[in-house]
Image 1 (cartoon, rainbow, N blue to C red):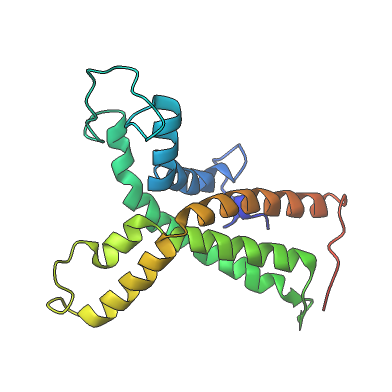
Image 2 (tube, helix red, strand yellow; image 1 turned 60 degrees about the vertical axis):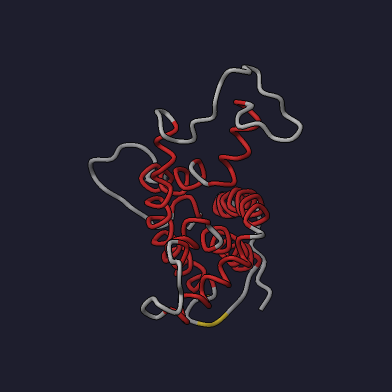
Length: 196
């Protein structure tokens, strides 16, 4: 199953592609992502100023995300919660891809789905909001319930967060390639070669 269509939802009342029932979640997660926000705020709106980008209106003050339409950006953490649930069926699809008629096997498509899901998981789990959820709001880990465990998870997420940009771009291109690969294999244009 293509990553754009996973999990497979078929309902009588929906007349369009079932992918639209799912894609708003990862789409909203990416659009409100802190990394992407920085990129498109500076690229398209020239605000707030980056080192090499000048402000077009000298009297304008950056107000953050306190007014519409930027207020919408604050829903990022809720898209994170939904994106975490979307990873579950993607990993189940990877496990199913190792099943070749009841026997273990590995094909090129198996590896494509595996790499895609690893990259999407890396992008989702390196998110700033997840890091904040685990321990960003704490002033004292040793004073908090399960503080040592939370600190360990927070440290790992912080290390992964350094590569959030890499996870963002590689996962974006890979999910597009994985969808294309599955689509072309299902149409008979490409052959999914079995490796093991």
